[in-house]
Image (cartoon, rainbow, N blue to C red; front, side, top):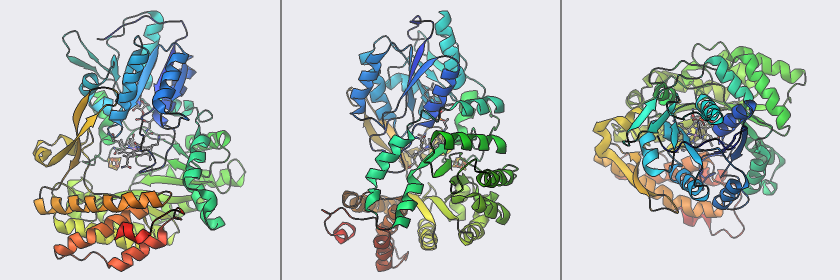
Length: 543
Ligand code: B12
Ligand code: SF4
C-alpha cells in the first residue's frame, strides 16, 4: 500500500473533512455533515483529538480555510468524505491537503469511496480508502499508528499493493450496540447548527416575511437538527445506492440495526439540550417506519410524555421519511399527536409499471389512501418523484405529472427529478443494457489537470420520451435561472410547479394534456416568496 509513516505523537490527531458542495442550498437545506461528526465523536471518545472541517460553513473561501487548518496542527490522519454529487469538489480539497501537507496520511471514506475505491486511487491523492462505516477502520488505523505498526490489512479498507492492484478487505457492519454507541457519541453540542441557521435565516430573509405565521413556519423549517437512528434501508430500490452501502463494505448482506424508542428519546433530549432553539428534529433514516414496526407507537407515546413533563419543548416538531405501505390510520394519528408535521414518502412515480422497474410495485395501492389520510390528519406528505425510468413510456411520465399536480394542489409538498441519476452502487447504474442510455458529464478537479467522465443521467430508452424529458429539463433550467436571481430561495414545491409548467407545451405537442397553463402559473405565483426589490418582472422568467 501507499506511504506508511510513523505516528507523530502518542496522542494522534485527526482532521475530518465533510463533503464539499459549493452550490449547497440549491437543492436542499444546509446542515453539518453528520457522517464525519459521528466519526469525530467516536474518535474523541477513544482519546483521539479530532477536528471536523466543514467546507460548506466557512467564513472565507473553503480552500483557504482548509490550508489554514492544515497548517495549524500536526495531523496524523486527514480523512476526506465523498459522495457522488460532490466528488469533484471533495477531490479538490484532497489535493489541497496533499499539496499543503505532503506527508499527511490521507484517507477517503463515504458513499463514493466505498463503491468506487479504484476511482479514488485514480483521481485522488489517497493512501487508503475506507469501505462502509468509518468507525472501526479509523480506530484501528489510529491504534496502529500509535503502536508504530504497519497499516496494511485493516478490515473495512481498500489498499493499493506494489503492483497497483486494489485489494479490498471487507468489514462487517456495526452491530446494533456498536451503532447505538456511535450515534450516542455524535457531538451535537459541538456541531455548529446555529451558524447554519443564521446563514439560512439571512438567505431566506426571514425578517422580510409578511406575517408572523409565515416567519414561524420558515423558522420551523430552518431551525432543524438531523438525527439518524438506522444503519441502512433494506428495500432494495433499483435506483438507490444507500440500500447497498453496507453490503458492499461487508461483501455480504448486512444486518439491519437501529435505535429503540427510549434510545431515540435520549437522543432527542440531548439535541434539545445542545440546541435549545431547535424547532424541528429531522429523522434522517432512509426509512423511519417499517411495515412491521414496533417502535413508532411507543416512540410517539414517549415523545408526548416527554413534552408533558417538560423534558422537551411542547412545540417541538418532527419530520421523517417513511415507507408509504407502512402507514396506517392509527400510526398517522399517533405521529400527528407527537408533533410529526411532515412525512416524506419515496413515491417515485405514479405508474405501476415504473414502480415495478424501481422494485417498489407494492407501494402503488397505498398511495391514494395514505396521502388522503395524512392530509386529513393535518400532516403534510412530502413526495419524492422521479419522472421517468429507463423503460418509461410517455404515458407514465404524463400520469406522474398529472398526479403530482393533483396532490400538490391538495397540499402535498413534492420534490421532482426528471430521470434516474446513476449513483455508484445502485442496481440500475450497474446494468450494462442501460449504458447506451447513460449520459456523462466531464468533471474537472479544480487546481489540478485531473478530469474524468462521470455518469449523470439514465434517460428513457424510448427516444421520444428521452427527447421530451431533455426538452423539459432545458425549459426548466431556462426558467429557473432568472427566477433564482429574483427570489431569495426556491423551495421544492416551486421547482415542482416549474417542472409541470415546463412539461405543458412539450406534452401538448404529443397530444397529452397535463394541466391548464394559466392555473399552473397561478399556483406558482401564489407560492412565490418575496421578490428581491431589484427584480425584473417575474412573468418574463416563466414566459
Ligand atoms: C442526510 C442526507 C442528506 C442531507 C445532508 C445533511 C447533512 N449534511 O448531513 C440533505 C437533506 C442535505 C441531503 C441532500 C442531498 N442528498 Co443526501 N442523503 C442523506 C442521507 C439520507 C443520510 C446521510 C447521513 O447522514 N448518513 C449517516 C452518516 C452517519 O453516514 P455517512 O454520511 O454515510 O457516514 C458514514 C460512512 O459513510 C463513513 N464515512 C463518511 N465519510 C467518511 C470520511 C472518512 C474519512 C471515513 C474514514 C469514513 C467516512 O463513516 C460514516 C460513519 O459510519 C443519505 C442516505 C444514507 N443512508 O446515507 C442520503 C444521500 C447521501 N444523499 C444523496 C443525494 C443524492 C442527495 C442530494 C443530491 C439529493 C438531491 N437531489 O437534492 C442532495 C445533495 C446535497 C449536496 N449538496 O450534496 C445520495 C447520494 C448518492 C451518492 N452515491 O452520492 C444518498 C446516498 C441517498 C441515495 N442513495 O440516493 N442528503
Ligand atoms: S426506500 Fe429509499 S432508502 Fe430504501 S432502498 Fe428505496 S430509495 Fe433507497
